[in-house]
Image (cartoon, rainbow, N blue to C red; front, side, top):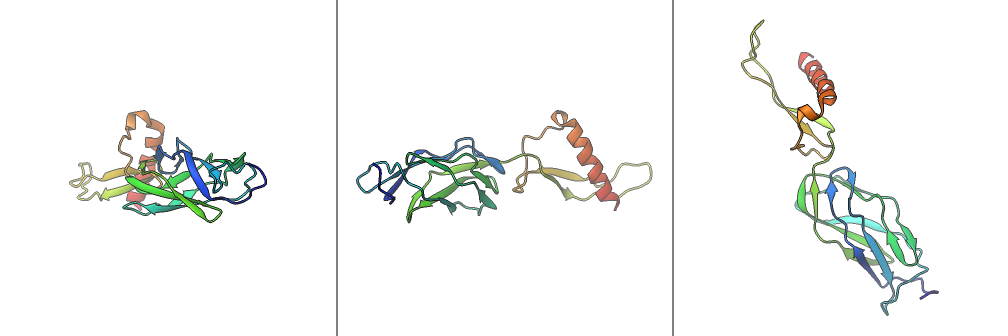
Length: 171
């Protein structure tokens, strides 16, 4: 249907899913814009907003560029969620005064971003091991513990991070 500019019913043809904190969703949403008769609004030119509407935790950010809308179909390409690892985030997509809620999205941990010292070292004697050894956790940009981090897979990163930890401990 052409000549119609109003959106009565946005519907998902592809639900958003597959999220790692701070990375674009692996399954980007696709939304069709339909009129009150259920017809595709092929010349729709509205914009979208996306907000979090459910979840035990609040996302740090929901980032995206406006989707390309062609023939009444809005295709997102870079929708990115950043926040704590959880399995109950829901998003509301709004356009033309109408809204549509997504299914629950599971947010996993993202890429290595920073280190957190959870146990400070202490009890140093020259030439002897510390009585309290430091515990350092690898975190993503949302503050999630990167659970599958393996130092042998990231030797150069680990060396750089270890250097930084030593500098912090000596200051």
